[in-house]
Amino acid sequence: STLILTLFPYTTLFRSKKLSWLSFGERKLEDLLSDRFGIDVRDVPKEIMEKHHLNPKDAINGNHDLGRLSEFLYDIKEWLLVQGEKERKGLLKYLGSKGIHKDSKVCLVDIGYSGTIQMNLNKILQSNIGGYYFLTHEAPRNLMEECIFDGWLESYDEQRSANYHPLNDYIFLFETLLSSEELSVTNYELNEFDELLTKYQECEDEASRIKFIRETHRGIIDFTKDYVKFFKEYVRIPKFSKNLSMQAIMGLAKNPRPEDANMFLQLNVENKFGVS
Image (cartoon, rainbow, N blue to C red; front, side):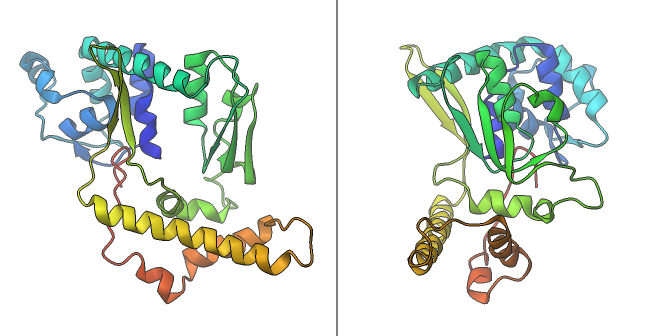
């Protein structure tokens, strides 16, 4: 989930500023602070809001307001650092419960594309966790020099070039199709008894979301079983080639069968981290 990016704490002002620069569409200031930084706008002193001529309902645009937003975030650094430290402690406890620590022999498997989660985990743990992806982008190449950062369909694709991989046109579609049944995690925190609390992103129609995800996953598994059943007579271990996989993937995206297209009727999908 792209929302999992909000897990990572902002224990330096540089990281807070960096997080504010990650692209987002126009949205209310109160929603941006809550969804991206875990800050309730009601906790921000009135004089700071007035200093920057901001109101909770003001629309903040990722293309035009980054300068003003950065100055505002600097003035609320006290709240950012407190919230970041709370989330850091919770995240470390969660990772520890899964056996993930500095010397763990683990890797991340994800859709793609820029390795942000992998990079932040390695910073927090001072580790060298590798990552395997559907597709990776060129931009983080220098950030991933010392660890595995491999894409299956393509590694270090330049999505801004004329010859970018066609999957880039349908990133949001496949992030939706391959979402987990669980709601996106906003953060982990510890209560007064040092017990781990997981906070999830709210969903307006949870029953419909779960139904859609389960049907999608079941279809993917059924397709895989049919493929293996058909080809196992001819090869010892049937595998999906990249070319065959791209045919299935891009066929769904560009020219879906009516039965597949009907799955998306009445479905609204929202990326609250990036706003889309």
